[in-house]
Amino acid sequence: MGAAAERAKEENEEWAGVTPDAARRLVSAAVQAFAERGYHATTTRDIAGRAGMSPAALYIHYKTKEELLYRISGIGHEKALRIMGAAAEAGGSASERLRDAVRTFARWHAEHHTTARVIQYELQALSPGHYTEIAGLRRRTDRLLRQIIQDGADSGEFRADDVPGTTLAVLSLCVDVARWFTADGPRTPDEVGTLYADLVLRMVGAPTA
Image (cartoon, rainbow, N blue to C red; front, side, top):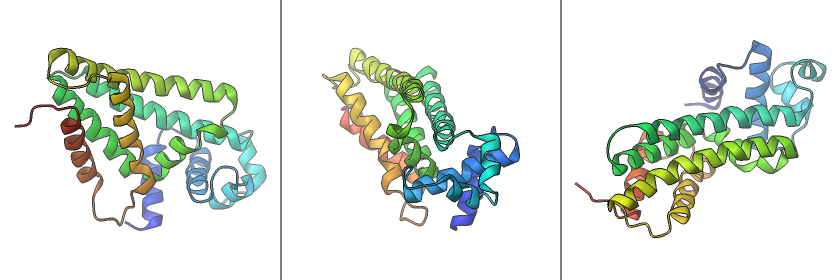
């Protein structure tokens, strides 16, 4: 998939809830700019230009560049929370839930690697109030995964003496996919998700078929 097609895919899928169309175009443009240049090196003029708009038009929808980052971060972290929540609340064994959680979480970080790179690695640019809100979403995601691993440790399915540390390791493994994944690389997002799910299950000593 080419760069233009990838941008269109992210805009259509990831930002479908952002309205009106001009606000959605600005979010999509900001993601691309932040991913390529970094938050601090990106100007509002850069973002507006990518969206085909004037700098003045940007301020109709977003008061500041930081507000755009906050919007992007909120959507991305809410998606992560939904992914983890669906796996945690599903039926089945702890191994089945952990496999589903890691496969889906890692696959999302691959499929939406540009967006994921921004929401995971530009957090410190948020204002204190916005950072606190996003950090709360991250803690909720952490707790859901931690509970799955704790359930497996309690049932004897997993060998995880340090559940918080194991949770951190699993989350870090999945998040890092956004740093190295490229659409023209040797693995598809589905293949990455499956690989990481298998690796994590072996890491916690889950029984294998």
